[in-house]
Image (cartoon, rainbow, N blue to C red; front, side, top):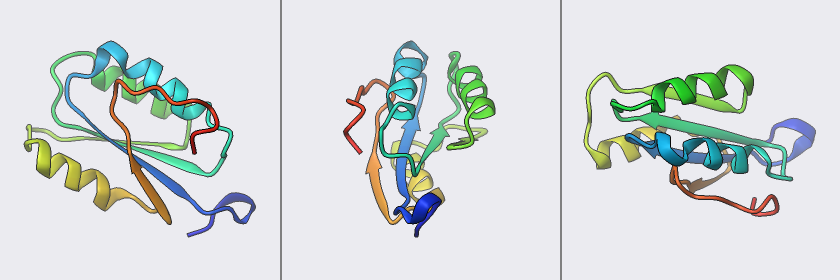
Length: 106
């Protein structure tokens, strides 16, 4: 799929559970990518910390973020599958909530 300026869409899948500690830094690094046509798909596996509030705040400020929250913990494998099924991009990569990327990574 192509998006803005005819560039291929890159989907970044981030399954998360209780990732509040490093989540802001990780999202800031993804949003700072030099490649502009990305979507960040977050599937929150019923976190019990501040993950939900952080994700909702970021999603409200940047349309590239798609936030989904599971009402109950689905387990890791099902949450990973959920992220992947929500992706629209021609390319896909996994991101952890505690990863940091250089702006040129994508």
